[in-house]
Length: 126
Image (cartoon, rainbow, N blue to C red; front, side, top):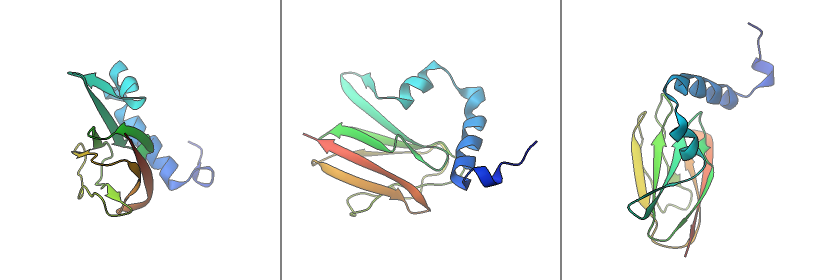
């Protein structure tokens, strides 16, 4: 197998590893979840995955009083920490979820403190 180390960053390599590990369990609903929220009992359910040492998607818009769920799909821990200090998940083990209900509007950048290259933005609209 040819070496691709010089052509890909470590984050890109981990994203590929994470994707390959998930292939056997993928189905059509995974594609739908990756590109938007589902509706359940009239409430919008938004999800951000921690996958391949990235937040997917890395920017998400929700409305005040909506709940957003982060789920760790990587085989190692991550966390969700607001840059401004508004929220923090604590460390999430693989397949663990954390939810946050938005109380005010604004733009909220966040990071994984365990993996500084991981960042995202939650945009809360009225």
